[in-house]
Image 1 (cartoon, helix red, strand yellow):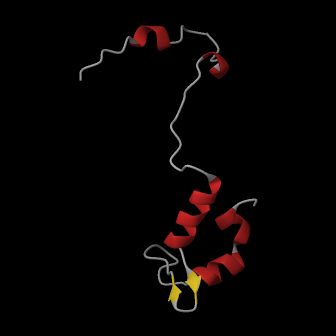
Image 2 (cartoon, rainbow, N blue to C red):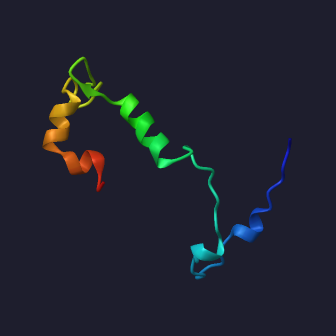
Length: 80
C-alpha cells in the first residue's frame, strides 16, 4: 500500500501562528481501559516480597523498586 501525503496543506507560512485545534490528530489508544493499563503496569513492575523489581542500569542500578517508591513517590507515580 503506497499512500501519497500532500504535505503542503500542513505547512505554516512565515509568521503564521500554529492553532492545534484546527489540526486535530487522532491516536488509537494503547489500552482498552484504565483498568487494563493499571493491570499491565502492575504486572510489569513488582514490589512483592517474592518478586521485587530492581533498576537495571544507570545511577540507581540494583536498587529495589520499593526503595525508590518510598523516596520519590510523586516522581514515579505522578498525581494519582
